[in-house]
Length: 281
Image (cartoon, rainbow, N blue to C red):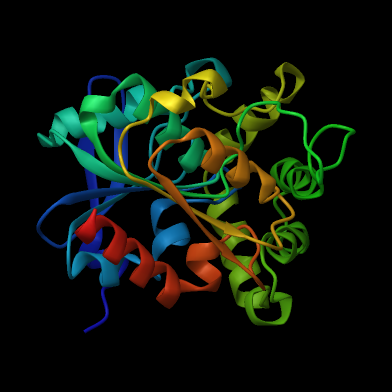
């Protein structure tokens, strides 16, 4: 039986937010956090993973404030670590494994440094880590992929969504289909206030939630699995090499023929790796 969003969709009121999320399975809590692209949601990022992970764990895929069906948020209000803690408190979750893609990975890293008592395992896929100098990334500001992402926020047309999907993945022919690009455009345009808030935050720098402090990475004690695409054009894989060098109990799975969406491009391998990691560490 294939899970549908109609079966997993939930909403909850926390202290400050009305949050939409997907829920499935039983057992150890695993919280999945999506990336920052226009139209990104817990379901769009993790629809190929929720069912497999839910056979082993109690899975939650959250639309964070400012994205999906959750409350809108200005750039000044974006504190996704606090929102994640509020989400856990509202559901009575004491501790959970966190699995975060891109922005969600950045949130998970910061949560591990600021609330170590609430996290049991850390899994990241292509998280940005502050404004660190890079060997392989562009030196003129945002990466090639982030520039396209910003353009898609400014104009969330199917054409710009196609450009966005193409830069997010390695296999463009397989993933940048007209149906997917139209669906991503429709999802983004359904919440224009999310688009406006993101664009309004651009003059203040990348409109993302607060960044982890790199000097605190060594304080992360939980088992950490870093997954990164060798062909990531949004966040270079050297970011995960930096994390590997600084997080004591970490290991890196570096995938060839993989862009920024490892969990979408290689779902079976991703699911196997995450299940084994959480179950055996």
